[in-house]
Length: 420
Image (cartoon, rainbow, N blue to C red; front, side, top):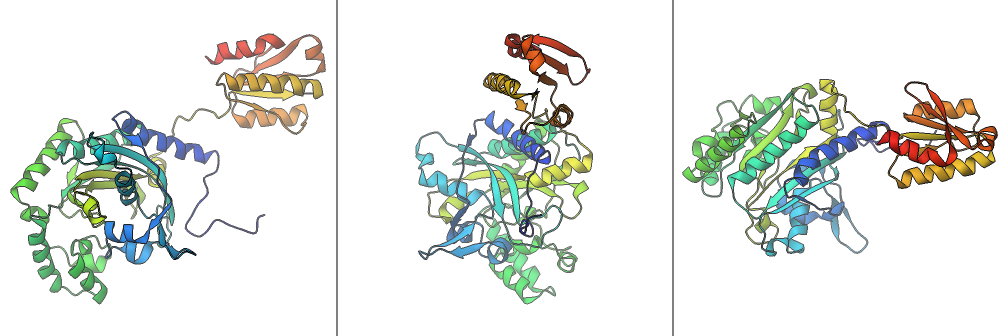
């Protein structure tokens, strides 16, 4: 056994379970690729200041959860705790917004890092697939992203998830609500840290998960009662477009996402089979983030869906993904000459796009056939000295058990025909 273990709060993706994670990533990405979103990949670490400005200095992510460090050259960096700020930074740096085709539509997949108490569904290293539409203020974009996420989840076979929807207003109406909420919070029995947070960003207090705080928020003023006419109209159009697409959602006037940059539309996907860590993804509109990190005004909207959480949701519903076997053909050579011949045939099959594997290590027939069974291969090709002397190999159908002698020079074409 190794001396080392994976760090606390992290995990290794190992076959065969890793195939499930890959399938989830592909399912989430598929509708995005079909809707004009191009792939982007950013570094695993960025300037601490990018997240302090973009995510918010009062958020738990920035104050408690970031893995921050200083390089030998004195740069202050952090492992990325989320994807939106990094993607927007990259889009601005590459001037994608100046190419004349707004919105810039991007999707990404990767690992993110937050230092928090590990528990099922909450890790210090986790995987997300995200999407961002940068540079356009349009309710149809907000609706599009919600619909695409719903489509992705349903393509996986998930059904017991809910979409929560709210509006956080904009710079015109939110300050009025902010003041009213602060007045309300000042009258509660809250600890000093929470009161300090209320002065910096009172909406963050609404997102506090502690029961001692939540039970005091029953009569808190609701943002929907303070929305300006423009925000009301915008939100109503988002709701109408989602409804017209046949996507069910629940209005949640207390929904506040945990990042400071959200404006107007905010939404969350929750699954009731996951216990306290019920959120499987979420997002919203962030019209002021570009300016926060030094860019021009670029109204934008996006989401991130947790791959880990989605896998747990599938398990909670008992959904088994239809994942094809990693190997279609398994070659079992018996003897040196058979090794040379079958290795050549395996290489030819792979060039044709057929998943093929080989019995390495000079195992006997019994051990090699056990490996063939474990591989999940549909067909096994076996050859010994006597077979080769007769110019044939033995082709075994692992489902039916039927075995047929096929000419050495015909075996590749035969398998290509059978596997289509």
